[in-house]
Amino acid sequence: MAPVPAVARSMDWWGMLRAPEFLAHPYPELHRLREMAPVHFDSDSGVFYVLGHHEFGLLARSSDLGRDTRLWTNSWSTPESRERDPVGYALFSEFQPQMTNANPPDHRRMRAVYEHAFRPAYLARFRGRIEEECRRVLDTIPVARPFDFMTAFANVLPLRVSLRMFELPDEIESDLARWVAALSLIGNIFVTPKQKEDAHQALREFKVFLRGHLKQAGDDGFLAMARAALAEGLMDEEESLNNMVTLISGGTATQTLLGNGLLILLRHPDQLRALRTTPSLMESAAEEMLRYEPGGSFILRVAIRDVELDGVCIPAGAMAIGLMAAINRDPRVFPSPDSFNIRRSPNPQLVFGAGPHICIGKEVVRMTGRIAFAMLLDRFPQMALAGEPVWWVDRSDQHGLDELPVQMS
Image 1 (spheres, rainbow, N blue to C red):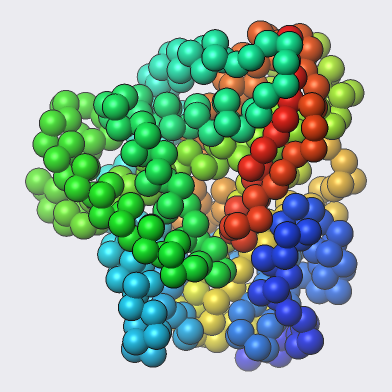
Image 2: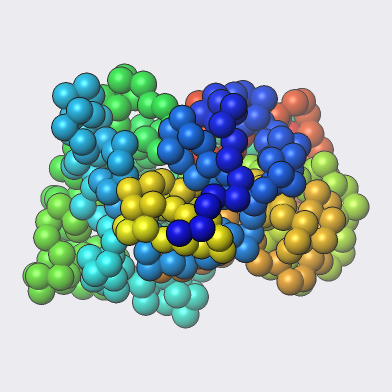
């Protein structure tokens, strides 16, 4: 097979990817690395880092690479890892059976149960419910005084949308917030023992709730689909519960779109004015927000067998990680990649991935984001930053805000 064209032996990749300054603003360093080569190999960890748009597209669409991390040479599932980290092994073992973590044919079998329900035509039935929840949350926002947009709006709306879409009772909202918060940390490069314990407990509590709630669901909607798939033998109970946990918890992508997107608009007042003047630009504006400040930091694949992609040899069992902040600002695809332009077209941003494993909930994120920004701009003619934003520094796989101080009137 062809040799790897770029090798970065002296870099501390793990250290870079979890450094607070990098998590807040990764673009200059990733630009520098991508100019060296679109694919890098870390000889210390055996991980391939993909920084090019074209290269990641090949990676994500290849049938020779998948999402089952048990195939990774350094996997959590090895006997050595199990002995060294029994809590992590228990957590990941219990969360493994679901479409997100499966390779074909299991991935296709499970995804087919829900795929039609995440298409725009089916999701249109939820538009009114999302608008109503958005109005309710907006009604609680302070007027003409500083407040934290994340706490007041961006963290709340995705949870409310999940409650409505998945027929969950309002009284579960605080538990749902706690479960999602704990589970959202397990995709990090480094997860502390306490975080693993909390996530494991959250997963078990979440499943106990869903196991009972599935029996009470109506004859339509996502829970009915899950129940029917169980009855028809398309999924077993663990697959069904894990898939529901992941689908319900998917609001983190909306959370980052809302927070990151508002920050971008406030830092680009000319683009904010253009969007107010021409509301029909909302669709392209949301795509540009997703490209410019992507909420997902990386997307991984594991080689099922030896594969050569565009001259890069990836051996079976190796992990490849696409770094989205580099991929979505690749100058070979995006002219003036560091400029925020709500009229950008075409805009083949890849924050949701590509290929068979492209994010199944991407249209929910898009629809909720467009509705929320349209209603925010309509209700508040004046919006401004009221302090410095604070980025997450406790999660390397996500790029979002802990605090966003703003004032609206």
